[in-house]
Amino acid sequence: MRRSDTDELATYNDQENDDSDDNNIFDTIIKYVSILVTLPLFLLLSKILPDPDWVINLDRILLFLSTFVVVYFVAISHWFLTFVGLIAGIAFLSYGSFASGDHYGWGNAVFDYASLIKSLYNDDKEGVYVLVEINEEPSEIYILTKSDEIDSDLNTIDRNNDKKEDKTIESKDSSDFTDGNYCLDIVDKKNSNYYSIKIKEACDYLEVRDFALKIINENDKFKEKADLHYKYRTFIQSCAICKFVNEKWQEVSDPQGEEYFAKASETIQHFQGDNDDYAIVLASLIKAIGGEARIIWSNGYAYPEIKIDRTSWNDVSCLIKSVLYEELGIDLLYHNISGDDIWLSMDNTGPYPGTELVNENPKDVFIIAL
Image (cartoon, rainbow, N blue to C red; front, side, top):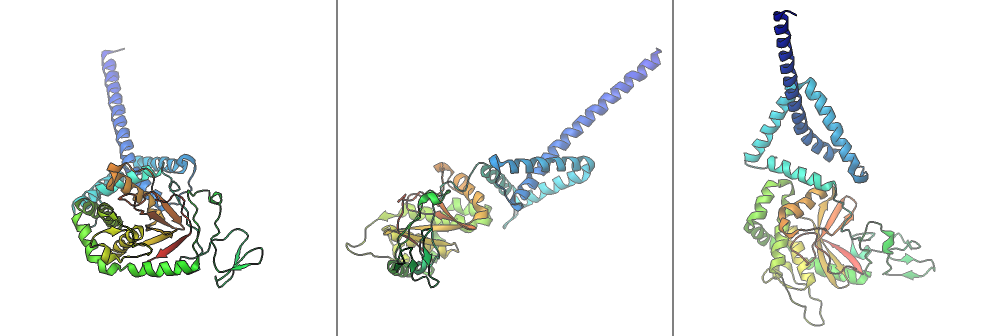
Protein backbone atom coordinates (compact mmCIF):
# COMPACT_ATOMS: atom_id res chain seq x y z
CA MET A 1 0.00 0.00 0.00
CA ARG A 2 1.30 3.43 -0.88
CA ARG A 3 2.22 5.80 1.93
CA SER A 4 -0.35 8.35 0.76
CA ASP A 5 -3.09 5.72 0.99
CA THR A 6 -2.02 4.81 4.52
CA ASP A 7 -2.14 8.45 5.56
CA GLU A 8 -5.59 8.90 4.07
CA LEU A 9 -6.88 5.80 5.87
CA ALA A 10 -5.45 7.00 9.18
CA THR A 11 -7.01 10.41 8.68
CA TYR A 12 -10.37 8.79 7.86
CA ASN A 13 -10.24 6.63 10.99
CA ASP A 14 -9.40 9.64 13.14
CA GLN A 15 -12.35 11.56 11.70
CA GLU A 16 -14.64 8.58 12.26
CA ASN A 17 -13.49 8.32 15.89
CA ASP A 18 -14.03 12.05 16.38
CA ASP A 19 -17.54 11.78 14.91
CA SER A 20 -18.26 8.78 17.16
CA ASP A 21 -17.09 10.72 20.23
CA ASP A 22 -19.19 13.70 19.20
CA ASN A 23 -22.22 11.44 18.77
CA ASN A 24 -21.66 9.88 22.17
CA ILE A 25 -21.40 13.28 23.80
CA PHE A 26 -24.52 14.48 21.98
CA ASP A 27 -26.44 11.32 22.96
CA THR A 28 -25.40 11.74 26.61
CA ILE A 29 -26.52 15.36 26.61
CA ILE A 30 -29.84 14.37 25.04
CA LYS A 31 -30.39 11.72 27.71
CA TYR A 32 -29.77 14.16 30.56
CA VAL A 33 -31.93 16.81 28.94
CA SER A 34 -34.67 14.21 28.45
CA ILE A 35 -34.56 13.36 32.15
CA LEU A 36 -34.79 17.04 33.10
CA VAL A 37 -37.79 17.50 30.80
CA THR A 38 -39.39 14.24 31.91
CA LEU A 39 -39.41 15.15 35.60
CA PRO A 40 -41.84 18.12 35.40
CA LEU A 41 -43.97 16.34 32.79
CA PHE A 42 -44.19 13.27 35.01
CA LEU A 43 -45.15 15.47 37.96
CA LEU A 44 -47.84 17.20 35.91
CA LEU A 45 -49.24 13.93 34.52
CA SER A 46 -49.27 12.37 38.00
CA LYS A 47 -51.47 15.18 39.26
CA ILE A 48 -53.80 15.15 36.22
CA LEU A 49 -54.24 11.43 35.53
CA PRO A 50 -56.31 9.25 37.88
CA ASP A 51 -54.35 7.00 40.22
CA PRO A 52 -55.25 3.31 39.63
CA ASP A 53 -53.30 2.44 42.79
CA TRP A 54 -51.48 -0.61 41.39
CA VAL A 55 -49.28 -2.88 43.46
CA ILE A 56 -45.95 -1.25 44.52
CA ASN A 57 -46.97 1.79 42.43
CA LEU A 58 -46.27 0.07 39.11
CA ASP A 59 -48.60 2.56 37.43
CA ARG A 60 -46.31 5.48 38.40
CA ILE A 61 -43.18 3.60 37.39
CA LEU A 62 -44.64 2.80 33.96
CA LEU A 63 -45.84 6.39 33.59
CA PHE A 64 -42.33 7.72 34.26
CA LEU A 65 -40.65 5.27 31.88
CA SER A 66 -43.15 5.86 29.05
CA THR A 67 -42.86 9.64 29.51
CA PHE A 68 -39.06 9.41 29.36
CA VAL A 69 -39.12 7.28 26.17
CA VAL A 70 -41.44 9.73 24.41
CA VAL A 71 -39.41 12.76 25.52
CA TYR A 72 -36.13 11.07 24.50
CA PHE A 73 -37.24 10.33 20.94
CA VAL A 74 -38.78 13.78 20.57
CA ALA A 75 -35.52 15.29 21.84
CA ILE A 76 -33.49 13.38 19.22
CA SER A 77 -35.71 14.43 16.34
CA HIS A 78 -36.38 18.00 17.59
CA TRP A 79 -33.35 18.71 19.75
CA PHE A 80 -33.43 22.47 19.19
CA LEU A 81 -37.02 22.82 20.45
CA THR A 82 -36.17 20.58 23.39
CA PHE A 83 -33.31 22.83 24.46
CA VAL A 84 -35.49 25.90 24.05
CA GLY A 85 -38.17 24.30 26.25
CA LEU A 86 -35.61 23.42 28.90
CA ILE A 87 -34.21 26.94 28.99
CA ALA A 88 -37.75 28.37 29.17
CA GLY A 89 -38.55 26.08 32.12
CA ILE A 90 -35.42 27.14 33.98
CA ALA A 91 -36.23 30.80 33.34
CA PHE A 92 -39.82 30.30 34.54
CA LEU A 93 -38.76 28.66 37.82
CA SER A 94 -36.04 31.24 38.39
CA TYR A 95 -38.50 34.09 37.89
CA GLY A 96 -40.98 32.48 40.28
CA SER A 97 -38.28 32.12 42.93
CA PHE A 98 -37.22 35.76 42.94
CA ALA A 99 -40.36 37.66 41.93
CA SER A 100 -42.61 39.08 44.63
CA GLY A 101 -46.09 37.64 45.10
CA ASP A 102 -47.41 34.11 44.66
CA HIS A 103 -45.34 32.49 41.90
CA TYR A 104 -44.23 28.92 41.30
CA GLY A 105 -40.48 28.63 41.77
CA TRP A 106 -37.66 26.20 42.48
CA GLY A 107 -38.73 25.69 46.09
CA ASN A 108 -42.22 24.66 44.97
CA ALA A 109 -40.81 22.28 42.36
CA VAL A 110 -38.51 20.59 44.88
CA PHE A 111 -41.39 20.24 47.36
CA ASP A 112 -43.70 18.77 44.70
CA TYR A 113 -41.10 16.14 43.79
CA ALA A 114 -40.55 15.28 47.46
CA SER A 115 -44.30 14.96 47.95
CA LEU A 116 -44.62 12.78 44.85
CA ILE A 117 -41.79 10.48 45.94
CA LYS A 118 -43.27 10.10 49.43
CA SER A 119 -46.67 9.31 47.92
CA LEU A 120 -45.16 6.25 46.23
CA TYR A 121 -44.78 4.52 49.58
CA ASN A 122 -47.28 6.42 51.76
CA ASP A 123 -50.80 5.08 52.16
CA ASP A 124 -53.65 7.44 53.03
CA LYS A 125 -55.35 4.49 54.79
CA GLU A 126 -52.67 4.44 57.51
CA GLY A 127 -53.86 6.14 60.68
CA VAL A 128 -57.50 6.15 59.58
CA TYR A 129 -60.33 6.16 62.07
CA VAL A 130 -63.93 5.80 60.91
CA LEU A 131 -66.85 8.09 61.74
CA VAL A 132 -70.12 6.46 60.73
CA GLU A 133 -73.06 8.79 60.31
CA ILE A 134 -76.16 9.30 58.16
CA ASN A 135 -76.25 13.07 58.45
CA GLU A 136 -73.90 15.62 59.98
CA GLU A 137 -76.74 17.37 61.81
CA PRO A 138 -76.55 15.90 65.33
CA SER A 139 -80.33 15.60 65.64
CA GLU A 140 -80.41 13.37 62.58
CA ILE A 141 -77.42 11.08 63.08
CA TYR A 142 -77.97 7.34 63.37
CA ILE A 143 -75.78 4.27 63.23
CA LEU A 144 -77.59 1.33 61.68
CA THR A 145 -76.90 -2.34 61.88
CA LYS A 146 -77.37 -4.37 58.71
CA SER A 147 -80.85 -5.45 59.82
CA ASP A 148 -82.11 -1.96 60.65
CA GLU A 149 -84.34 0.29 58.58
CA ILE A 150 -84.80 3.99 59.14
CA ASP A 151 -88.05 5.90 58.57
CA SER A 152 -88.01 8.70 56.01
CA ASP A 153 -88.49 11.37 58.68
CA LEU A 154 -85.39 10.09 60.54
CA ASN A 155 -87.29 10.09 63.82
CA THR A 156 -87.52 6.34 64.44
CA ILE A 157 -85.54 3.23 63.71
CA ASP A 158 -87.32 0.03 62.73
CA ARG A 159 -85.71 -3.11 64.18
CA ASN A 160 -86.44 -6.64 63.01
CA ASN A 161 -88.51 -7.14 66.13
CA ASP A 162 -90.74 -4.22 64.98
CA LYS A 163 -89.88 -2.16 68.08
CA LYS A 164 -89.73 1.61 67.60
CA GLU A 165 -87.06 3.69 69.32
CA ASP A 166 -86.30 7.38 69.40
CA LYS A 167 -82.57 6.82 69.63
CA THR A 168 -79.87 4.26 68.92
CA ILE A 169 -76.49 3.51 70.35
CA GLU A 170 -75.98 0.45 68.19
CA SER A 171 -72.59 0.15 66.54
CA LYS A 172 -71.23 -1.67 63.56
CA ASP A 173 -68.49 -4.16 64.19
CA SER A 174 -65.16 -2.58 63.30
CA SER A 175 -64.44 -5.57 61.06
CA ASP A 176 -67.01 -4.14 58.63
CA PHE A 177 -64.50 -1.37 57.87
CA THR A 178 -61.42 -2.94 56.32
CA ASP A 179 -59.48 0.34 56.19
CA GLY A 180 -60.32 1.70 59.63
CA ASN A 181 -58.48 1.62 62.92
CA TYR A 182 -61.50 2.86 64.84
CA CYS A 183 -65.25 2.37 64.59
CA LEU A 184 -67.37 5.01 66.30
CA ASP A 185 -70.89 4.79 67.72
CA ILE A 186 -73.57 7.47 67.99
CA VAL A 187 -75.04 9.42 70.89
CA ASP A 188 -78.76 9.84 71.48
CA LYS A 189 -80.69 12.68 69.85
CA LYS A 190 -81.62 14.69 72.92
CA ASN A 191 -78.07 14.95 74.28
CA SER A 192 -76.65 15.67 70.84
CA ASN A 193 -79.09 18.54 70.35
CA TYR A 194 -78.19 20.06 73.70
CA TYR A 195 -74.43 19.76 73.35
CA SER A 196 -74.50 20.87 69.73
CA ILE A 197 -76.31 24.08 70.58
CA LYS A 198 -74.07 24.85 73.55
CA ILE A 199 -70.84 24.15 71.70
CA LYS A 200 -71.87 26.12 68.61
CA GLU A 201 -72.82 29.08 70.79
CA ALA A 202 -69.38 28.96 72.38
CA CYS A 203 -67.63 29.06 68.98
CA ASP A 204 -67.74 32.86 68.57
CA TYR A 205 -65.04 32.77 65.87
CA LEU A 206 -65.64 36.33 64.64
CA GLU A 207 -64.67 37.60 68.09
CA VAL A 208 -61.28 35.86 68.00
CA ARG A 209 -60.18 36.73 64.45
CA ASP A 210 -57.82 39.51 65.56
CA PHE A 211 -56.14 37.15 67.99
CA ALA A 212 -55.78 34.50 65.26
CA LEU A 213 -54.05 37.04 63.02
CA LYS A 214 -51.70 37.96 65.87
CA ILE A 215 -50.69 34.30 66.30
CA ILE A 216 -49.99 33.95 62.57
CA ASN A 217 -47.88 37.09 62.35
CA GLU A 218 -45.74 36.13 65.35
CA ASN A 219 -44.64 32.77 63.92
CA ASP A 220 -41.88 33.68 61.46
CA LYS A 221 -41.16 30.10 60.35
CA PHE A 222 -44.75 29.26 59.48
CA LYS A 223 -45.25 32.69 57.94
CA GLU A 224 -42.31 32.07 55.59
CA LYS A 225 -43.58 28.59 54.69
CA ALA A 226 -47.08 29.96 54.05
CA ASP A 227 -45.64 32.46 51.55
CA LEU A 228 -43.64 29.75 49.78
CA HIS A 229 -46.41 27.14 49.71
CA TYR A 230 -49.13 29.67 48.98
CA LYS A 231 -51.55 27.00 47.76
CA TYR A 232 -51.74 25.74 51.34
CA ARG A 233 -51.46 29.10 53.07
CA THR A 234 -54.62 28.73 55.17
CA PHE A 235 -53.65 25.23 56.28
CA ILE A 236 -50.14 26.32 57.31
CA GLN A 237 -51.60 29.26 59.20
CA SER A 238 -53.96 26.82 60.94
CA CYS A 239 -50.91 24.76 61.91
CA ALA A 240 -49.33 27.86 63.47
CA ILE A 241 -52.50 28.37 65.51
CA CYS A 242 -52.58 24.72 66.56
CA LYS A 243 -48.97 24.88 67.72
CA PHE A 244 -49.56 28.08 69.68
CA VAL A 245 -52.68 26.84 71.47
CA ASN A 246 -51.13 23.47 72.29
CA GLU A 247 -48.03 25.06 73.81
CA LYS A 248 -50.06 27.56 75.85
CA TRP A 249 -52.74 25.14 77.02
CA GLN A 250 -53.26 24.25 80.67
CA GLU A 251 -55.84 21.65 81.66
CA VAL A 252 -58.45 22.88 84.17
CA SER A 253 -61.62 20.95 85.01
CA ASP A 254 -65.17 22.29 84.82
CA PRO A 255 -67.00 23.25 88.02
CA GLN A 256 -68.00 20.06 89.82
CA GLY A 257 -71.30 18.66 88.65
CA GLU A 258 -71.53 20.98 85.62
CA GLU A 259 -70.65 20.75 81.92
CA TYR A 260 -69.35 24.24 81.20
CA PHE A 261 -68.56 25.33 77.63
CA ALA A 262 -66.38 28.44 77.68
CA LYS A 263 -66.63 30.74 74.68
CA ALA A 264 -63.55 30.98 72.48
CA SER A 265 -63.30 34.71 73.22
CA GLU A 266 -63.15 33.86 76.93
CA THR A 267 -60.59 31.06 76.58
CA ILE A 268 -58.05 33.16 74.66
CA GLN A 269 -57.65 35.30 77.78
CA HIS A 270 -55.93 32.49 79.71
CA PHE A 271 -55.84 29.30 77.56
CA GLN A 272 -57.14 27.11 80.34
CA GLY A 273 -60.01 24.65 80.38
CA ASP A 274 -60.93 21.06 79.66
CA ASN A 275 -61.00 19.14 76.39
CA ASP A 276 -64.18 20.73 75.02
CA ASP A 277 -62.83 24.22 75.73
CA TYR A 278 -59.66 23.28 73.82
CA ALA A 279 -61.74 21.99 70.89
CA ILE A 280 -63.93 25.10 70.86
CA VAL A 281 -61.10 27.65 70.90
CA LEU A 282 -58.93 25.83 68.36
CA ALA A 283 -61.81 25.21 65.92
CA SER A 284 -62.96 28.83 66.31
CA LEU A 285 -59.50 30.29 65.63
CA ILE A 286 -59.13 28.13 62.52
CA LYS A 287 -62.57 29.06 61.22
CA ALA A 288 -61.77 32.74 61.88
CA ILE A 289 -59.02 32.64 59.22
CA GLY A 290 -61.03 30.74 56.62
CA GLY A 291 -60.19 27.15 57.54
CA GLU A 292 -62.80 24.43 57.81
CA ALA A 293 -63.04 22.80 61.21
CA ARG A 294 -65.53 20.68 63.11
CA ILE A 295 -65.80 19.22 66.60
CA ILE A 296 -66.27 15.54 67.46
CA TRP A 297 -68.06 14.78 70.72
CA SER A 298 -67.54 11.32 72.20
CA ASN A 299 -68.75 10.21 75.65
CA GLY A 300 -68.21 13.63 77.14
CA TYR A 301 -64.87 14.12 75.38
CA ALA A 302 -64.45 16.61 72.52
CA TYR A 303 -61.70 17.14 69.99
CA PRO A 304 -61.46 19.24 66.79
CA GLU A 305 -60.72 18.16 63.22
CA ILE A 306 -59.55 20.18 60.22
CA LYS A 307 -60.70 19.52 56.67
CA ILE A 308 -58.29 18.65 53.85
CA ASP A 309 -59.17 18.03 50.22
CA ARG A 310 -58.30 14.40 49.51
CA THR A 311 -56.49 15.29 46.28
CA SER A 312 -54.12 17.42 48.39
CA TRP A 313 -53.41 14.70 50.95
CA ASN A 314 -49.90 13.80 49.73
CA ASP A 315 -48.82 17.45 49.74
CA VAL A 316 -50.33 18.14 53.16
CA SER A 317 -48.78 14.99 54.60
CA CYS A 318 -45.39 16.03 53.23
CA LEU A 319 -45.81 19.55 54.63
CA ILE A 320 -46.53 18.25 58.12
CA LYS A 321 -43.85 15.56 58.23
CA SER A 322 -41.00 17.16 56.26
CA VAL A 323 -41.47 20.93 56.26
CA LEU A 324 -43.40 22.26 59.27
CA TYR A 325 -42.59 19.64 61.91
CA GLU A 326 -39.59 17.82 60.47
CA GLU A 327 -37.85 17.81 63.86
CA LEU A 328 -40.64 15.70 65.43
CA GLY A 329 -40.14 12.65 63.21
CA ILE A 330 -43.89 12.20 62.70
CA ASP A 331 -44.94 8.77 61.44
CA LEU A 332 -48.73 8.40 61.30
CA LEU A 333 -51.27 11.16 60.75
CA TYR A 334 -54.61 10.21 62.28
CA HIS A 335 -57.50 11.16 60.04
CA ASN A 336 -61.00 10.33 58.90
CA ILE A 337 -61.77 9.83 55.19
CA SER A 338 -65.19 11.09 54.15
CA GLY A 339 -65.77 10.97 50.38
CA ASP A 340 -63.47 13.49 48.72
CA ASP A 341 -62.46 15.02 52.04
CA ILE A 342 -60.04 14.09 54.79
CA TRP A 343 -60.54 15.32 58.34
CA LEU A 344 -57.32 15.48 60.35
CA SER A 345 -57.49 14.91 64.09
CA MET A 346 -56.39 17.89 66.16
CA ASP A 347 -56.76 16.19 69.52
CA ASN A 348 -54.87 17.66 72.46
CA THR A 349 -51.98 15.19 72.20
CA GLY A 350 -49.53 17.19 70.11
CA PRO A 351 -48.84 20.55 68.45
CA TYR A 352 -49.69 19.44 64.90
CA PRO A 353 -52.74 18.33 62.90
CA GLY A 354 -52.99 14.54 62.71
CA THR A 355 -52.25 13.86 66.38
CA GLU A 356 -53.24 10.53 67.90
CA LEU A 357 -56.63 10.36 69.62
CA VAL A 358 -56.66 10.47 73.40
CA ASN A 359 -59.41 7.86 73.39
CA GLU A 360 -58.36 5.11 70.99
CA ASN A 361 -61.81 3.51 71.12
CA PRO A 362 -64.33 6.39 71.08
CA LYS A 363 -67.99 5.63 71.79
CA ASP A 364 -71.26 7.55 71.36
CA VAL A 365 -69.96 9.96 68.73
CA PHE A 366 -71.65 12.82 66.97
CA ILE A 367 -70.31 15.56 64.72
CA ILE A 368 -70.70 19.30 65.28
CA ALA A 369 -70.15 21.21 62.06
CA LEU A 370 -69.29 24.89 62.57
